[in-house]
Amino acid sequence: MTYNIAVLAGDGTGKEVTDEAVKILKAAGEKYSVAFDFAPALIGGCAYDEYKTPLPETTVELAKKSDAILLGAVGDWKYDTLPPDVRPEKALLGIRKALNLFANLRPASVYPELTHLSPLKEEIVSGTDIMIIRELTGDVYFGTPKGIEIKNNEKFGFNNMCYYESEISRIAHIAFKTAMQRNKKLCSVDKANVLDVSRLWRETVSNIAKEYPQVELTHMYVDNAAMQIIKNPKQFDVILTGNIFGDILSDEASVLAGSLGLLPSASLSDNGPALYEPIHGSAPDLKGKNIVNPIAAILSTAMMLKYSFKRDDIYNCIVNAVRKTLKDGYRTKDIEQSGMRTISTSNMGDIIKDNILSSQ
Ligand code: IPM
Ligand code: MG
Figure 1 (tube, rainbow, N blue to C red):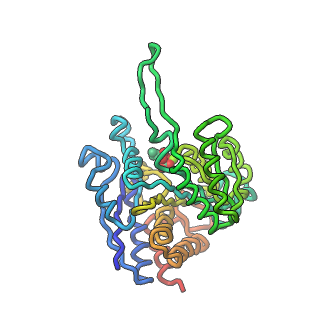
Figure 2: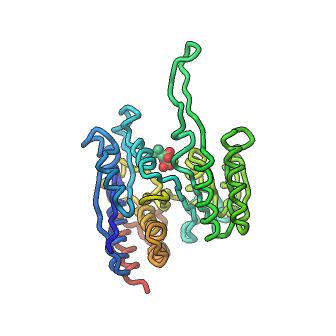
Figure 3: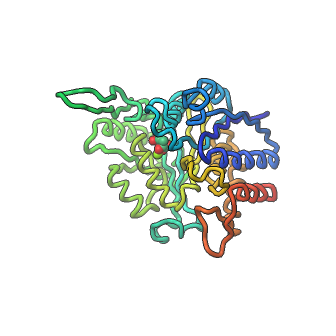
């Protein structure tokens, strides 16, 4: 049995971090006798340069027939002047929709070795372990009608925040199931005091809660949630929310961990391959310097093993190898610390790899 992995490195430092992630998958495969086959394809600005579209049909086809997708990052300032429809970011939205990747899992956990990195007080962030579950293929991101028109003799811009009940319930089931495997606490975030779409959200989530009596469900308005995540992050276990609120809250929560370079993500579908990517961007200014942190991409492969291939044993092995590497004092530039050794992107990958191969 061979797992086929589509590798969409993308732009900027995407290639550097996916190279390390592939290195780790190969090492884990060697240790556990799992075979991986890697097929590269273009996405983002580099795809635009080649095909005049950031998401070529060939890339979508390759992704669809893979067992899982590893993505680096897209975007570069040099594409900022392109029309919105062919910007690199459009490829992300396009692949999410094309593969029905409606469930976005963004863990925000704080490593004990790195609590000092957060701009928040250590006693507030230490021990934080939140799983944000963001709906990814609906909401104001994809709602219609949308556009910019002339109305009342002036320009008028509009989007539509909308959800079908079925879209809410399928993501809610994922959130409840995730909570069941964690501390059985789920906080659903909405704006039901103002928005009709949020009232449907809240009603639907509350109905589904009856199927998961062991999970303690709470609801929170998004403005309050934004405050609570910073004030007392440890109160959260799983957070469930829609696309736009999840976009904002997951960036906010990433601050708890101190560096974007540490945080992985998974985007799951219920009928096809899932996509795994670091939550950081392409950092084009750092490209080619071999200094960015590959840990987020490496942990994304750990998530791949857990969610796509049901290999919790290999997931644990990779996570433990990363933790040992940090404990042993190795740091990349973004998490540099006095008394610790600052190493390159590829060195970080090598040390984590050695820790995987030498683990029990
Ligand atoms: C993210 C990003 C994307 C989003 C952008 C780049 C389209 O911010 O993955 O969170 O808004 O979803
Ligand atoms: Mg975002």
